[in-house]
Image (cartoon, rainbow, N blue to C red; front, side, top):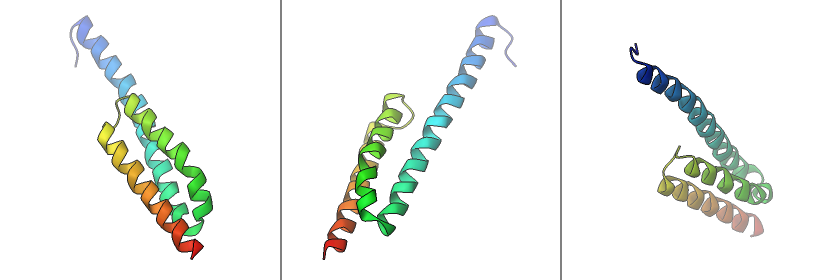
Length: 91
């Protein structure tokens, strides 16, 4: 338990940051999962969801919740899957 005023303040800040980070991380995971599920069922809708998903990942990076390269990898894989599904449906 925190004994000093400084330690108590740090503990409170950590709790607030943990809650905020958890919220952002949960939202990010949800959006990516939804996109992956949509790719298989509706490629046209998945293409529309690509930009908002990328934006959500960028927000998570900006807030320091996920690493920049992690977001880049997720965006790349999502775009690749959407484009592959769109090509398969066109054929």
